[in-house]
Length: 179
Image 1: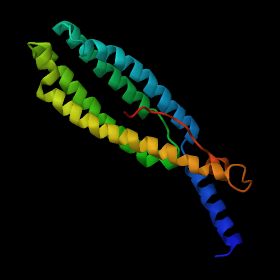
Image 2 (image 1 turned 90 degrees about the vertical axis):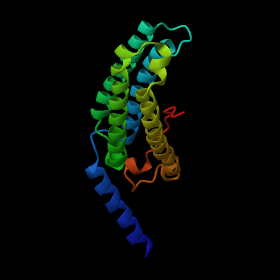
Image 3 (image 1 turned 60 degrees about the horizontal axis):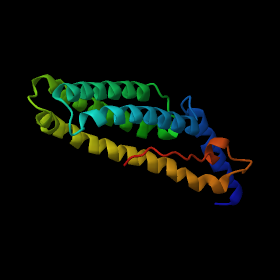
Image 4 (image 1 turned 45 degrees about the vertical axis):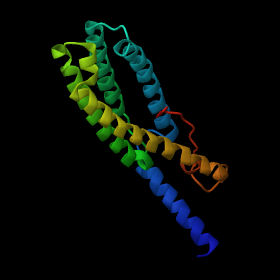
């Protein structure tokens, strides 16, 4: 393939990708994910500090667990409200799907709180274990998202290439804290 044909093919691909994109640019999408995640994480950390405190009363633990379920639902609503760029659409759908499972598992766990006789029982019951297992799957999706954004660093070599659309040169640096 000659160089002109290669350049023409890349330009056509870039135009097609740009035309199919969501309403957010890759950077805007990443920034929104990071912002939503940081806000939720701060709220989770406060609630979980109470839930897992060694001296937490059963009522405090019940309330903290209900709070974490609410935070999770609100975060999920924010995720669903995002319109990702085309290049992230499939991964975003996976994120929504896996997070919906996490929301459901966390709510099921929170629903057991009224019948728990102790904090220990609340933290170790079957629903808590299911939540932790499903949460681990969600963590893998988070890592895949992080990896996808990290891979944009390779585009830095294309920066300033006049015949490539900006979105093909876009590099994104985010830290989701996928532990």
